[in-house]
Image 1 (cartoon, one colour):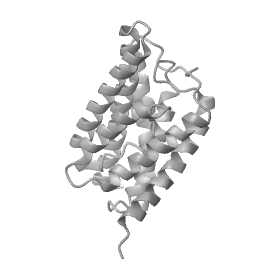
Image 2 (image 1 turned 90 degrees about the vertical axis):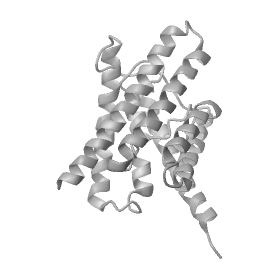
Image 3 (image 1 turned 135 degrees about the vertical axis):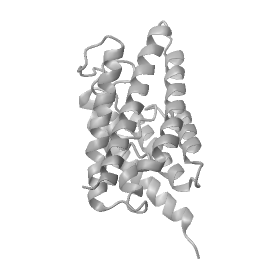
Length: 217
């Protein structure tokens, strides 16, 4: 593994860790300050996620492509010039980063570093929400022109926090990381499989939509 690949993997680990730290940390802060008002807590969670996504894509995009999401790597890694081995290596780096980010958020708010979430999420409505959120994310990334991905992705995720029933995880690594925090943004381990399956279906649909709308002839 050469130095360039190691740098890319570290950027993916770091970016995913910071993303999850922001998602979970802002959820904790928002929940504590909102005094039981879930809408205010979600608004705080949304703003933090939008801002950190924009910053991370702008700063780490030139290094690794700023995927921070196994499905994004699978959908766009080959076209981005990443070798098969590098694409495979991105996924554990993202997963590890997500767990480390969750643990960091827990520690900052004086919670146990490792804890399992008890927040059950599931049912057809939320699974459909994840399909829509992930399909839209893949489509937006695929249609983003050079220099605009950071703003478009951040804006889409911010909107999807509110128009999808699942609050738009749209990322298996994010779902894994959120299992390790029993807080506002958490997800119970028993709910993980349904969310990840829905995300995979959404990614396939987003890829198909891209091909359909990119067809010529």
